[in-house]
Amino acid sequence: MFNIFKKVFKRTNEAIKEVAPEKKKKITKDEFEDILLEADVNYELVEKFLEKLPNTINRGEAYNALITVFQYKADWKDDIEVKPFVDMIVGVNGAGKTTTMAKLARYHQKDGKSVIFGAADTFRAAAIEQLTRWAKKLDVPIVSTQQGHDPSAVVYDTISSAIAKNIDHVLLDTAGRLHTQTNLGEELKKMVRTANKAMPNAPHRKMLILDGTQGSSSINQAKVFNELIGIDGIIITKLDGTAKGGSVLSIADELQMPIYYIGTGEQPDDLIKFKADDYVNTILDGIFI
Image 1 (cartoon, rainbow, N blue to C red):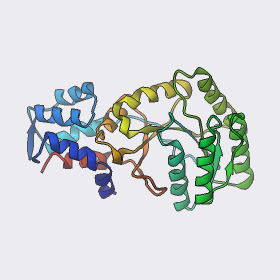
Image 2 (image 1 turned 135 degrees about the vertical axis):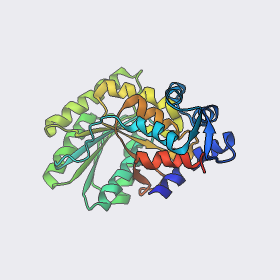
Image 3 (image 1 turned 45 degrees about the horizontal axis):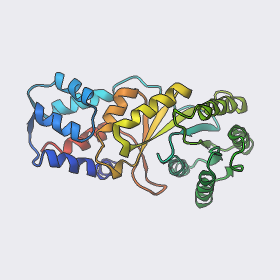
Image 4 (image 1 turned 30 degrees about the vertical axis):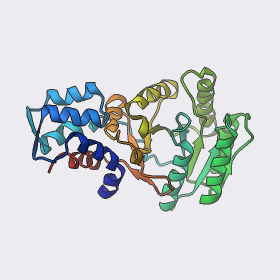
């Protein structure tokens, strides 16, 4: 697992190397500040770290500072004993929602669980087509309709089908919503209400997909979605293609939400559970001997 983290954050560590070409046993506060800013950690968070650190910092001190970001109380909703377990996948267009759904399906399949897709992004025909292709490739049933039809109907039918067929996991796609599109925001709220009608307490998780290449700017997106429907957890995609890996610290600090998974590539198997300890140690491996 740790080696996978090294692969995912390779570009981030390459960016760190440009600021700090040589690894050391100790670094100064100024060096640590430059490194964290280069990796796209929010300036305010960097200052918060530096306040608690001595003028010369060793690896242990750096680790203790960074790991505190993840030590918040969060309601992890991955151990709810319910069948089907309903995940609603939300996020802006281009963040990787549909591909992440395929990865989640594969993740559950490897665990011996059955999955059904709900193509509730009826805003774009391309989204329905893309999810249908993944469904065929992964041998996953899918409930879909035509572009422009009521997405809430898809939500209801997908959950009802999962109950009837005794399926373990429901994965619901949704349209990429921006905070300027009020009508789409209201539609998303209706989909949540409809899921609850189809099955009490569904969706059990509302998972936000954040594009890792956007760095800390994705935090504002998260806040908008959280205000709309309340987000239960985060999946960060495309971290293998960016030098902004430090933004994970900013995301955790600002949102105080569980980070469930990170994407590690383009294929269905390229999804791993996020582990704060492995993440922090991977970043520090680029700094210290």
